[in-house]
Length: 221
Image 1 (tube, helix red, strand yellow):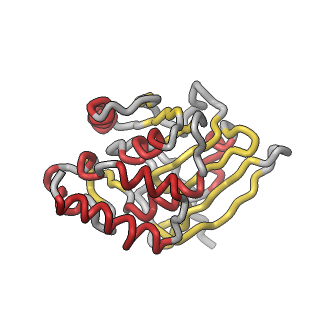
Image 2 (cartoon, rainbow, N blue to C red; image 1 turned 180 degrees about the vertical axis):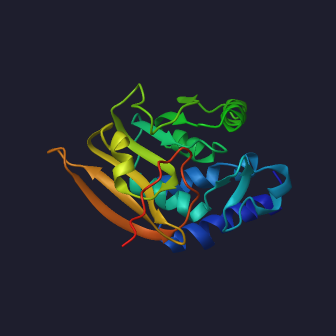
């Protein structure tokens, strides 16, 4: 590993992720240990540690590092926890969840991205990961209930997430990005013992729509 890359990773942690309120040592250690450049297309290697979303092909992106950090901190994934990821993409978030000790089921609707991520994660020797080609919004995922669910694309309304919320264990947490561009917000939804949900807005951001996300009718008065 060259010194330039090591410095870039160190600066990502210290200048992007920590200042954005990510103080969980386990999250910081996982992101510091993982070579983000291994997940970035060759054409964008120079942007692997930049504070931006990186295109990964098929119209998809990698979330900015600080967003990944906030997502991981919010989900508070513990070793041995069952986690569902919706939208594998490059597999970077999948790898972070694995390093935190989670048993990860990651769903990717695009077969090209799914195959590439599967091969990449296997080459890195990461374990406790199952990547499946599936539409997470179409039906429940075998292997639940889940302690945490990470949705990497945006949806316009919470009602679309009902099929995912129903798969959370009591006390389980779901991270999602809600709204319409350019005004979107990251939310954390926690399933209470009663079956109800506590919802908390985390930060403003923007992300591409989740694939196959249902259209929400627009009412004209």
